[in-house]
Image 1 (cartoon, rainbow, N blue to C red):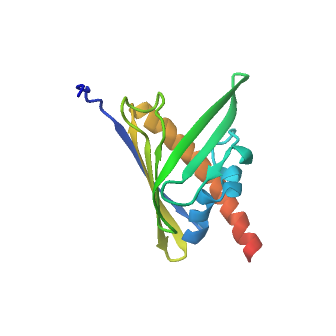
Image 2: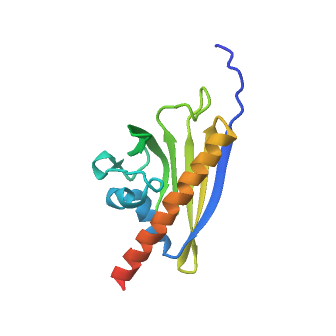
Length: 162
């Protein structure tokens, strides 16, 4: 057995309230058409044909965010496996491979808890395995921007359902 050096990891924890029933918010994470509409920060595209969701333990939760950075085409893939799946309450997933945001020997883990708060939804998001506080802060900004877009999508869904 080789000795591995302990690497400090960082965790992102955040909460967000959505003015929509938890089933709608939960489905926004599991429906590829909906993910394509809101996932990724402002200015980032998540093409529908680059999203795979298999809603079960052991299923894929994968997508590719596409963007331009100083005129250069860039892609940021997320390739996760669902490790816990309890609709409409919980999704847990672990990335299949690590990248520069993840400590050696670690995988990025995501936990999404959906709590019904009287017809609204409290989402508790936890991601662990980051190599630095910088990655945590950048990821938090990305989620905040994505959730602002999701708010608009959920409001539009509610308007058409009324």
